[in-house]
Image (cartoon, rainbow, N blue to C red):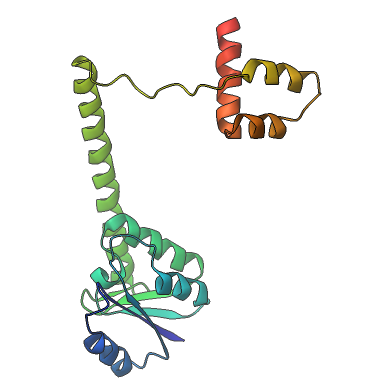
Length: 187
């Protein structure tokens, strides 16, 4: 099935140009969002991803209508690939069924990875400078009043870890991080 996705940024904007293109391309079902593309949290986009089945083809007028950043774009493409759904963007001539389309996806993935590595590098440089200036001291440790008492109760089998975590109002990962830190301090 050919499925179209149309997006405009505000409710006042018209979808006519995109919907006419979808009709020309023989699209059988169209999902329309009138919302910003700043992230993937769009009602009709989610419905379309859920609706799509193996062998379907998702068609968009342009990548900018589908996603506004590389990370979201690649995440959406990954979701479609897992379902064996083809993606076509008319403006950029990307068709994940073709060798050239798959190549373009590889290029997008490489660029996104490089972009992410640069971001991490800049973040680390910024933290290093902030630490040198005494402005960054790292993550504040979680304070868990009553942790040690609850830990002893779990070790004696009086309560479960799940109950202890609930009483502290924290997560299991925080619980176990504190257990490891306590054990390390006792060595």
